[in-house]
Image 1 (cartoon, rainbow, N blue to C red):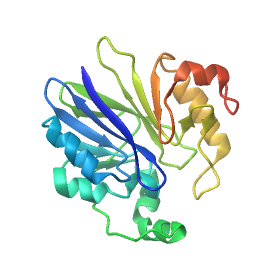
Image 2: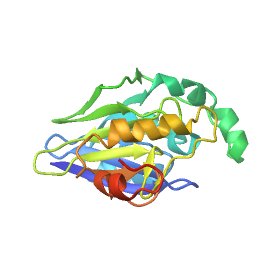
Image 3: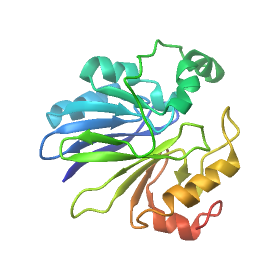
Image 4: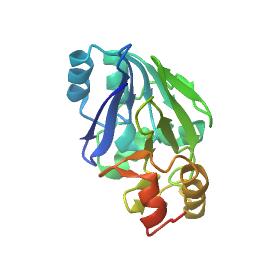
Length: 213
């Protein structure tokens, strides 16, 4: 069984998730773009141990409070290496959007397609889905008796897809990632996108106006 709390965080309302194995209370934090106090409340309320801080990509709104979470709760900072240029360019990203530049924390683990990020009896499977950024990934989490979860970052949204007009973005690559890496998974999977409401892979494969199966 999983414990999951997903909530909008930061000025761009990035969907941040605290996800834990209910049996062991080991947890991961996905895309901590803000709401540090909310994360701390959930960690305390459920008596969680944060094992990893994982990122679907390294745009500012998904990494802005990574250092705060690391300093407060520990856990390995995880990112795909193809987004290193964005993570290292944190100050430049902040300047683009008028946000305050802040020091970042070092990445502890560089992710590769097919990696598993363990938290208790559960794990998150890394699916490399470039397009929105070169290092964009999705995380697939399965639990007995539950539908799979796919944390899609800014790759796939309900009836939309991620923008590709920022540095490193490529529309053709994004569409290929969605069709070949996501629509080939369990279509009953619940999708938690980087922003906005949840959906399912099946709904998007049938009805997404940008990329159909």
